[in-house]
Image (cartoon, rainbow, N blue to C red; front, side, top):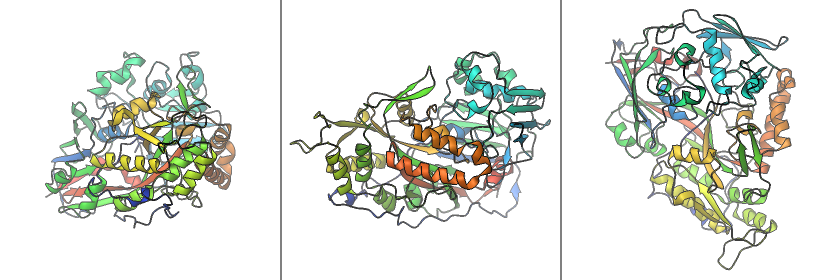
Length: 590
């Protein structure tokens, strides 16, 4: 299973008519400091179907999304969760991992580490072939790194983590034609040479080890700046997973058939189809049993159908969280770094904190989360129990505190009840949020009213909720009409936040830069952290506290994943160690 940090869409499905939140109606409103009072969901991690499998059949999957998926089926260039979900049946990780996300043997390739030599050795299973019959080779592994690092490619995966490979920066800057730290010893052996070893390297999703490969022979004639848009990636991807792409309807659906060259167990199904389904019709689709499995089930669908007839709900705590980000700078694409603007509208800590304290996030979570959402207290979700700073309260609603912060910072109210900037100018805050369903609009109107109660004039960018793709296009481009944005991350299985919040991280979309933050991130992934785990945990907890205090990025909600699985499906599980070989083991019963 390839676990990477990617964008996730707005969770949909709250009822517009039911949205009655008292927290914005009283200037002394306060919420409790606990994460949430709602009973958290508890679902089985797998559906144990003991019936005998039938031969073949078509597995029908619905993916809830109100936006078309982009269809970038090269992980090096893909950025969002929807493309990952669509392509998962064909796109397999190089490495297998256990339930703690640690690399183990038995994958398409095995990986081993030599701390003294500062190397990682990748041994490719000689049985592995691409879906066009060509063998997976060392060059395919190297080529994936080149796609990420080549300055002409359009992806955002080139981060500080990968700069740890020797020669990566020189290649990225055009000073070298190859990456010197990637040594191809033979057709099936690759040695990665690092500047330093890090504690997360042995864990899937660390960012220091890229876990995919790309078919060099299939793509070698495509210019790097054309790879993202080429037919070989968009229409006819070549992969080495248990299934292969058979048909793609752009942005709407995809069909998969067994990969005849798959190196592992022969898949059981004749076909897998995945299709987008709108959040408004997801509940009806579930009731009519249109799909065998539903991904990204809206919260309201779960709330109305906790035990849908003919289905079993499976799930687990999700490596994900939602957040509110404050724009304070730009990304310099030429230098590959974030550049903070100290004079940016939102570059006032008291203003950022006040907006966070004014919000009634816990009431939203309690009333409409159905146990699947809880108010987050830091930027490390509860799924990472060891690294979570449980002493932090986050930002429970406290309107009095919000008003005092604004008063002290010089944001005085005018005759119209709205606050002005400290230098007496009109203050209007543009807020960008994703569409999901009617509930998303209702929730954002609720928050705008919360901010109005403390005298802040806030309005939606473009006057409406934005489509998922349009939203992230504007946020990444640092659009001038966005001051604050509501986003979400689907996280990798290694908790290091470096690829999201470092100075050189394109994903650091608030564009804040701080020497203190840089030092914390370096400490978390340092050589010392390799040998002193307790010290690393301490750095994590201090970083969370510092990030809350600075409030460039405010944690909103942690998630619990729920997946409706029809009772004639066999072999589906949310268990991490089973995820690598999941789809070859899924079948249908009578």
